[in-house]
Image 1: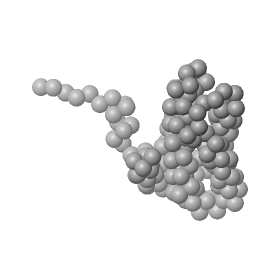
Image 2 (image 1 turned 90 degrees about the vertical axis):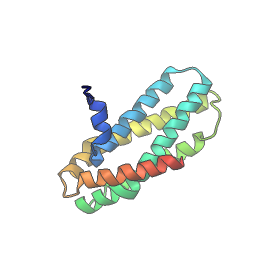
Image 3 (image 1 turned 45 degrees about the vertical axis):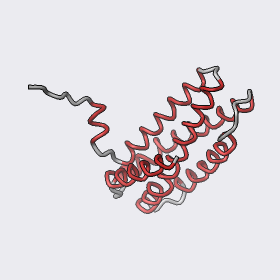
Length: 160
């Protein structure tokens, strides 16, 4: 008789995540990519990491803007957190546009990646300390939102 041991990673993949857990996992994954970028000197690796970062951030921003933010805005009757986060997304998207398809050509490229990393860190900090606790305490169904967001993320990743 063989028994299959479920690891916590297996459970994490199969168990539906609530919206905040899904977004936090995205935040962590992108943070790790930025850390890898800072450590490498290889232009090929930099280009590959930036492509991954840009895709991850673009998909993440889209699922937040399409699904999470409208639900949070409605549940909290918010007039500040969501609009501010949306403006921050615009700054991130602008930097992504400047980096996509461009060869890593020295200090300006590295500077753009550094500024993108700083924008994202600031945005993540605000979401995790201000928006997420309020969203979690609201009437919004975080599990249902998470299910919808995960499905939309899968669709978008298939396109990218």
